[in-house]
Image 1 (cartoon, rainbow, N blue to C red):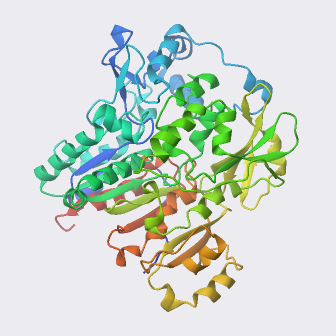
Image 2 (image 1 turned 30 degrees about the horizontal axis):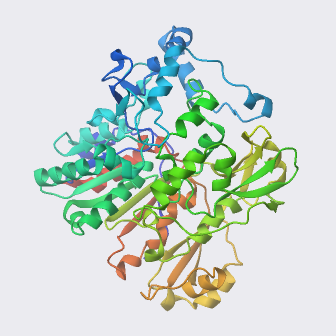
Length: 578
């Protein structure tokens, strides 16, 4: 058995190539019914109540007209071609807003009054889940809520979420009898999705109806934060009815799932990084909006051992600061409160225990901030918090690799109380496969990754202590290096870890050069690889298949023909030969 990820090679073309029609011509037909769950900011939100009557029952996320009428008037009174060119240039270009202190401290030009009203609509109250007075945004039902975020030209094609996937599945023969969407208010924490909206209760009804109607168990397809939402849902339902998953769910297809989190969202909370919304929001507006979302900590780096490098005032020294400290320095105390109350204290989420030494001087800035998370994760399955365990259903994990991905930050804390990315840290950065630019530390295609999985054959194949001792020293840069480590060894390196009594104490370690998908670090995408092979020893751990697509980024993977082809193979059945 090969315990490494399967690499899905392609011809380098991202387009979907009418895969659905091709598979249909080859005799493939829908087999398993589908539920599709989008990620962060990927469900339409409509105003069911509004302080502006004409906005009621209309899209607020995302509506460019509501964001700014002035913008439409000034920027988009032009030909279709130039409109699209302007949109693409401004929406997808990183304006490097944190390039210099002077630029950062200058606020954007004020937008029109309607724009300010839009900001009030999209933000929640300070508890991270309540609606503002007179305003209610909710995710509408139906496929239309997750295919494209905007219906107006020329924005539709550039707001694609699951549109390409859905079109190909429809070409294969899927329709509303065997494929449904599960949009949700992505601003909420998982517990408030249920307590405020009854989302999980409704999702149960959808899945059970699909299973009964089609007389087959359901395949759930979830992208990005949608996986973390479904992971929580399945554990929630498993505790209520331990047989429900086995009865109703066939497979969980996780696309670009951020198992250990994705630091990029942290940057929006700290500095106001606008992540494609440069045309519409100022830095302060972005910080304000993100700091009212109870969902944001869902994507924070796992564990209290994560840190950033911070330089105070005019000091030339960077010090290690915890995630809590960085959030408090930047004025995001509420976001840390959400993290503690809605996640750490929730038994269906939990947290890894770990500590860092605050204010520890750092001479070389590299990837150690992220690597400490992996150290704290050296646990066996039943020792991990629920948010780091795959729920008991077969998993197919698909993600892209090969795009430089941010993992941590060099920050400057000014006397004004503001926190910025610090470019001076770039000069102190150690390459070691990482690079630092504009205060952002990235993993690259040259970053050495360590990842583990359980191997029932490890004790038979290798003298584990000898192999581990020598293999850690040796590195093969043109391919994976395989060696094994015992829980006993991990315990000696990490005294807080204790071996379990379930007999599953053998880990196989892989080392290879990789980076993530531009949004999620590689080890976060790949984390569940450590459970491959464990199903043979522990039936509570699901079967896991991991598939990597080189050169595909976090968002565009949903338009990739390799992913769509594999998804169709997973959910369809070939009923006739060519």
